[in-house]
Amino acid sequence: MILDALSLTPGVELEADLCIVGGGAAGLSLASALEGSGLSVLVLEAGGRKFDAAAQEGLNGEVAEGSSHSPPHMYRRRVLGGATAIWGGRCVPYDPIDLERRPWVPMSGWPIAWRDLAAYYPRAQELCEAGAYAYDVSEALGPAAPPTIEGFSDPDIVASRLERFSRPTDFGKSTFARLAAAPAVRILLNAQALRLVTPEGDGPVQRLEGASAPGRGFTVRARHYVLASGGLEVPRLLMASDGSRRGGLGNAGGALGRYYMCHAENTLGRLRLRPSDRPVALDFEMTEDGVYVRRKFSFSAEAQRREGLLNTIFRLHYPLIADPAHGSGVLSAMYLVKDAILPEYRRKLATIEIANRGKMVRDGRFWFSHATNVLRDSPGVLRFGQAWLRKRTFASRKLPFVVVRARDGRYPLDVNAEQIPNPDSRVTLATARDAHGMPRLKVDWRLHPQDIDSLVRGMKVARAAFARSGCAELEFDDATIEAEVRASTPVGGHHIGTARMAETVRDGVVDADCAVHGVPNLFVASSAVFPTSSHANPTLTIVALALRLADHIQQLSARDEAPGFRAVPEIAA
Ligand SMILES: Cc1cc2nc3c(=O)[nH]c(=O)nc-3n(C[C@H](O)[C@H](O)[C@H](O)COP(=O)(O)OP(=O)(O)OC[C@H]3O[C@@H](n4cnc5c(N)ncnc54)[C@H](O)[C@@H]3O)c2cc1C
Image (cartoon, rainbow, N blue to C red; front, side, top):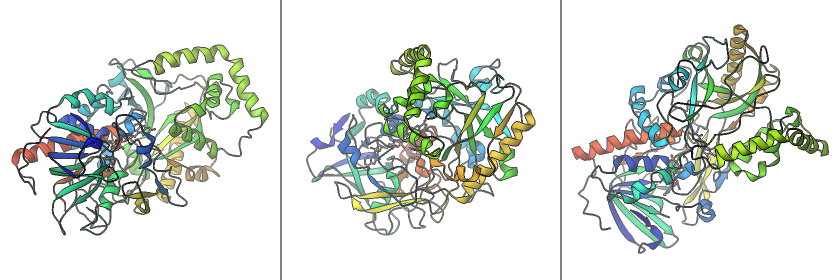
């Protein structure tokens, strides 16, 4: 059932077995998994069914001086479906090494085993509409699939893995019909959770206070609560719920809001194929189950252990779009229309430009060169436009983006790197408040010297590996690479580690079951709980952990073991 909180009587009290805060990928996966379980589920979603600028304003916040993080309202969406309304759909599982305790990565080691997570990936794939759980080239594309770079093989670099792409699925749309028809699920739109009320000391949540508009408050009483409000709103709500516990819930050890990771993103070096026309699997391919996939490179687990590297991947990238010297009509056309694309993606282009400031002068000649590229290649641009309409605009499974072959066989590396959990990279509450009086967020994302060092050394390990293979040369300037790496930016939309999973409250906010330490009926389903960030885009793992949490809550309810349990009367529709 879908309800609008704006139509509730002010001060009304709602009851449920389970109250989920947030209707994004995590919250809607959890609700879907519990549909038909016998539990009554109430999902509170602060946004509506459609994007609304006024609702989005509630996500505004501050960025600390010196942090290159984007403003907090960017790369998020306050709408049913959350950020999956605009995500790219790249699905990547974590690697087994990511969950290990790695002596060179401080605070590493998840309190759950790899198999505990991996068991949920196949079902997470289904919800993400990303096809089979197959991430090896031969598994996904068959044994006859060409190698990523013909002739390339090296023990330090894995070139046989790929990324799979969701449609991209907007969870607010894909789960809507089923959840709207589910008798025991209610989705309450325009319903912002403002605080959780708990007793002093350890003890369960007694009630949740929320509002649909100033002066239109409501209360929820539930046996269990799950915060599925995203990696930035989870710590915000826990910190704002400080009525009985200083610093907020789950924060007795001071970990709440700290250890904030996003992945460091950059375009580094150039891989020069030898010879320049050496066959390379550059573009998107399609699996037999009709899913777009793309190849990637990563450091082998052995190389990571030997060199003390953070888990990092790279892909072959297109030339700098802004620089007309690439000679591509398609890329120039993309650059000229860039102002028509989503601000989130426009910012990414702008960031790359800023990193290259000084290398390009935007004078009349600059614009003339782009226009010349488009005109010279107008049949190609036209063909591309038609293909784009067919494969992207009108297709239900969309081509993720455009990959352009380099005429000279040189490809910059598009790098995504793990960051260490750093207590000084953090989010806190600002003094400013939103329309409901809830403190806004202040984000202070940081790159740690170890993040920089790992990426610089990783580039050198990759250079040596490609040189050994004789297939390619990785070119970069030793004198400037550290400065280039230092300019890496956080991947927008990846909000990790702010309520990390750890055995004790000294090291984290939730336990291995994702229950908040000291609040036994409160759980978190979000990338906020990931103790380390891997290189992997987070959504597939968010969904996998939400499904795992659904099983746990069902078991708890079946055994009637929930601390703080009290019988909940039948819910009136
Ligand atoms: C441009 C972009 C591209 C991306 N590309 C990828 C990609 O290719 N691959 C990938 O894995 N990830 C990608 N991401 C990240 C991905 O979108 C997120 O990981 C994912 O959507 C997170 O899901 P979530 O449910 O945890 O949180 P969210 O999507 O943030 O959903 C949380 C929901 O909770 C609601 N909410 C928040 N606070 C409250 C409150 N107090 N009360 C009630 N409701 C509340 C919000 O309105 C929202 O609907 C991308 C993100 C962006 C922005």
